[in-house]
Length: 348
Image 1: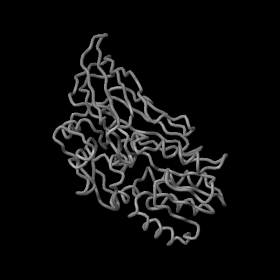
Image 2: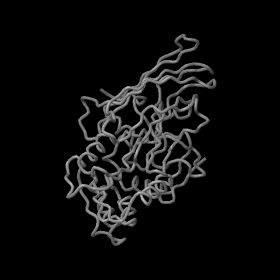
Image 3: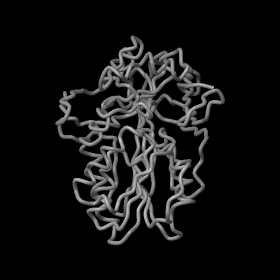
Image 4: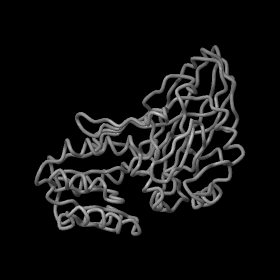
């Protein structure tokens, strides 16, 4: 089953391994921004949430404004002022052009910097952000928004999103596993090369990295579980280890985990990227799902227990802006006897 993006005519299919875009945020180019602009799930949900929440005369900070589409929707809804913060200098002219064309340039101010490094002229009524990776926090969402909320938001201000949950479930996808084994990884264009990313991250084993991949419900070996919840209440953890147990529901070959998020954007709008029906546009073009592979597949049987320790951390040797990494390790047990173990780690 293939899908064609209305702008780039890019096609993709289920269980096809793609370059993990959340690991190369500073390398995003115009092609990726176009892909985001044509992501049906993303665009419909964010537009509806912004129209629901934004009231006339609100002041707004748009963290990671990109091409300015979220800022534009806020201005159309009556925002008095929108401050767009964007680290990528090359994309800001697109935002300015979009908003100027719509006639709102006098109510929009762009800042080319990380939000940590700026001071806004005033506190705001609302913070809008779409700095979500397909694991939820794999674009360093929590420290960025914790800081923004503390310094930019009024005492009774609100945020979009309100809450984010990360889900994981063990899967069987020998097709996706074989692609990683052979280092086959598609990108939007020739700029996104797996070898370059592995070198940049200092990763030798390609299985010590997650990938973008549409993983259908038919690949599930167990029911998905929430492994982490983020409420933007100053209590969210930046580093953690979560332990979960999954009861295997069918015989198969365990090849890794599917990860995805669900985000409550407003009282009535939630975005859920778990879907895999490409034809009906019930899956995300830009996020896809997160595939966390294990190097050595494990044959499992119905009733087995898969124990997972899932962690997020900051490698000491990785000195860059978006420096978070993940590890997933555990074991499979059958009638309380060890069947096999697995351990993948992105870096130290």
